[in-house]
Image (tube, rainbow, N blue to C red; front, top):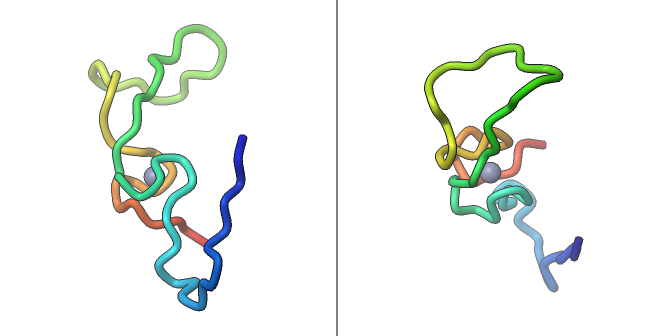
Length: 59
Ligand SMILES: [Zn+2]
């Protein structure tokens, strides 16, 4: 994992989501087995669950 911090970042409000890197999309693996608390349809690639597709990091 490479942790990149903005060189001169004063705007902490618009931090990009580290998971999808601001794209709002990510490839999610289909959870099979252990803890599947809520499985809806087939979600293989779609919204980033970390930022809920907004692309912004939630702090
Ligand atoms: Zn995200």
